[in-house]
Every structure is written in C-alpha cells, then in structure tokens.
Length: 446
Image (tube, rainbow, N blue to C red):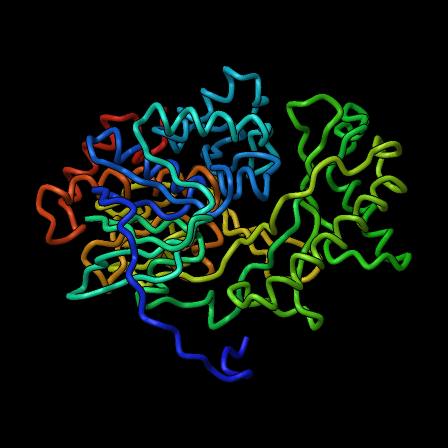
C-alpha cells in the first residue's frame, strides 16, 4: 500500500490519558501471549495483556486449528513430550472440559484435536486465575522510544486512545507490532517470500468414522482427481481433523496467494483484505468438492469459518541471536536454549502441496534465548511466530506448543528483568532453572 498516493494531512498534537503502568505489558493474546502473561504474573509481576479481538487465543480461537501441534517428539514410531509447562497445563484444562481428543499421529507429525469454542472460555478463567489484567478490543497504534527503551505504548479502544507505561514489554502480536512501530529491525520472511496463509473452517454432518477410515494418500488422490477435472483447487494435500464435537471435522485445506502464485504481503491492508475474501471463496469451493468427492462428507456443511485468515509468517524480528535452517535440520542443542522442538520444516510456500522436511528420527533442536530479544531495545522481548529466525527455521518453530514454550520463557524473563531493569538480557541459567521448576522441558521427557 502506498500511503502517500492521496497526499498527506497534518495530525494535531494530543495529550493521552495513562491507562495503566504495569510491570509487564504483553501485546497479543494468542498462544505465546497467554503463556507469557501467565508466566510473568505467576512470578509476581503486575501484568497487563492487550488483545485486538474480543477474546483470547489468537490463532487457536480466531483462526481455529484442527489440532495442537509441536508438543511431542517422534521417535521409533512413538511420541515423547517435548513441551511441558503452561502448554501441558492448557491441555489438561481442556481435558477437564471434555474439549480435547486423543493425539493423532500422522507419520512424523501429530495433532491434538481440540474445541476452539471451549478454549475461549477456558482462557478467560486461566488468565484471570493467574492474576493477569486483560484488555480486549485494544490494539497498538503508536510507540514512544528513547535511549533503547520503549517508554509508552498507545492503544486504540472503543473509548478512544490511551497510553500504557510498562517497564518491560513482550511482543507476542504475531506481526511484531511493537517492534515495528518502535522502529526496530525485522525482515518480511525471506525478502518478502513468506509462508502462504490458509482460511480454516469446520464442517458438521460429517460421517467421521467413514472418512477417517480412508488412507491419507487416497484422500489426496481424490482431490488431485478433482483438480484434474478442472476444479481450481490451490492445494491437494490437506489436513482434516475430527473435532471433539461429534460429527464435526476441521479442514486445513485452502492456500491463498497472489494471482501469479507468489507470496502476499499480509502487513499491507489492501492485500490482507483481498486475501481474507479469497480465503472464504476457497473454503466454499473445498466444502463443495468435499461433499461431492470425499467419503463421509455427502451431507456436510460449513458450520464455522475462522474469524480471520490463518497467517503463518509476516515480520521476523532481528534478535540478539537468529534461529537458522542448519540449527533446525542439524538438530543444534545450544546450552542457552529456552525451548525445544522436533517439528519438521513445514513449507507452505509451494503450489499444490505442502513440503515437509523432517529431522532425523528422534532428533530435536533448541531455541536460544537470544531469539526472543529484539536487538534494538533493552526492554522488549518477543515470542511466537515473530521470533528472530530465518524463513526456513520459522517454518518449524511457529507451531502452537513451541510458541507457548517461547512465551513462557519470555514472560519469566520479563519478570526477572524487573529486579535490574537495565535490560531484559537476563542470566540464562537462572531463567532455565525457573522454567524447569515450573515443569517446562529443555529436552524431551522420558
């Protein structure tokens, strides 16, 4: 978007009311943000979380996912927990609500089916019980910086604009909104090449027993047949999850690109608008093809569309350290890791199919603390899909469980930094000890 194509106006100076002065401000209430806020509050900090939607959960609830990915390491045909802490606590809370199903394993990947509607209410109670002050329907509009510190953050609410004056900030917005508005350095994927987004949706009236008895390659072949017959399917390798609600299936099937197949810039409002519309059109197409071609879907209808597009990648912050493709594929285990993952590089940047690059069986890698530290500031941490990583490495690290592990580490570090508020660059061994004491994993569980 060219902001100046219609000229400029002079914005008047204004005085903002101070809304809050928290120890830790978490921007974005998705998987990483919920974990960061809970971790910081449980360490004794006064924590405020701002979220632009009217509910928490981010991708888990506004986009919706069929399953929670990244919580396990695959080894010898079995799985072992690789993320614990607050992620494991969230799973346990969903189990108590009957809102989660047994883990499904597909070769070298897995997913834990869950009910996104139940997660919304669970998240409200979870953060409230943890002592987090939540502000919904609020989004960042401006950031003030001096001497390498973010001094205040301006947010827009239904009551107008106001300022929040935190000591430390954790940017879990996905799009690195704080770092971007503060003038921090970042890349947009790999020189503009990013993972393609998807419009997620759920269908009811599915004969799940019939459908899930069909081998995955056969499903792919049926969709390939539809493409060969002229159906304009942008993707023939799709993920379908049974929902904990009987007769409901979640479909991760669409793939939204520019007309020439290249990556969209989803930080551009015009491209994002068109992408949202295209995603809904594709969901309707896949629903019709599913009814006509897929066993068990003959009477199925769309019952829920993700409220927003599922964005996999936009801004990647420049951090003190950067997670790279060799770190992932060579299973690097740095001593200063604050999270670990065995998830493959999952490439949604190609046409038709998703390209998977799994690690060797039983292998995993660690994410160093420096990937959560914005190199341009002394009081800003990041977590989630906007971590400091290359395009390829982010394609592995961006899954839910790993994002929650990063969030828990960032929230814990943010509170640790309050005792010496010159920098968020805390003592990593001390941070690791706190994480382990709270049930986090820095290597796979036995």
